[in-house]
Image 1 (cartoon, protein in one colour):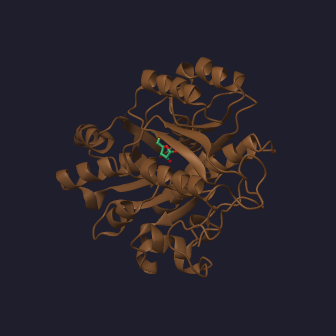
Image 2: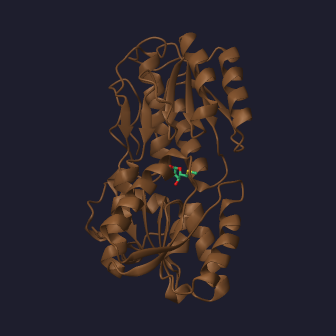
Image 3: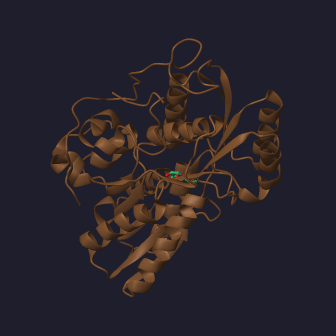
Length: 348
Ligand code: SR1
């Protein structure tokens, strides 16, 4: 791992800040309809609870504001029927674009097609809508899992008993799972003793209950691969309650200020995570919608690359917040994915 202290320092910068703020009534130099402003776009999420999704939404809102977009945010409640209904509502509102953040593809196909048929531009983040007209945004989930598992092998070798946290049906978790399957195939000494997981509005606490049962039944587990920060929090809670935090190492995905505190606190079993800045991913999703609305080319696959963050590296760099991380790791400031000269993007 590149230690944080060795990563290039960016000159300034803390949180998302747009230096070229949108002018009231449009963005100077932008093509239609952004030259006039007030373009309606909907952000329709499947999950809203948790640090990742809140930061993603904040980044989307910041980028929308900078483009003078009238962003309508539909909160996600892990309810497929409600998400379908929200897409229909957005169509009726007369939006020009819809960003769909997670969801279950099987329940979205027909309503998304309705939007496309009306000329509405659609962007999908972490939900496979399998339509050449819909750009897919992701965090390079294969690479994310590969970086995490490389660190697992570096710290633990390739002979250990593992626990794995996974819920099928979520595109990023399914992609990370493909890498976990390959890792086990390539390392016969890695034995998965327990698998559990839950995605709900109480993911961390529900996962903690499952982890307690799994760790009690399988005391030989020394490594947990929990590639979602809410999963890692749940496992950490369980390890602390069982008094086994010193015998366990947790590897995860995602990062937030609260996660950094949990990772770096004394005695924490959460030793590494691989992450993007979710606010940057939210901003990228809005830019992909804006470019399409302006009639400009957008690649079908849009990836925001993740960075490995170890407990050791974070502690050594004295990083305590996501803003401090953004000061040290340029990728946490901004992404060069889907940009254009007329899009106010420069953060910091
Ligand atoms: C339930 S899916 C959770 C994942 O979605 C985003 O890709 C985040 O990285 C999170 O780990």
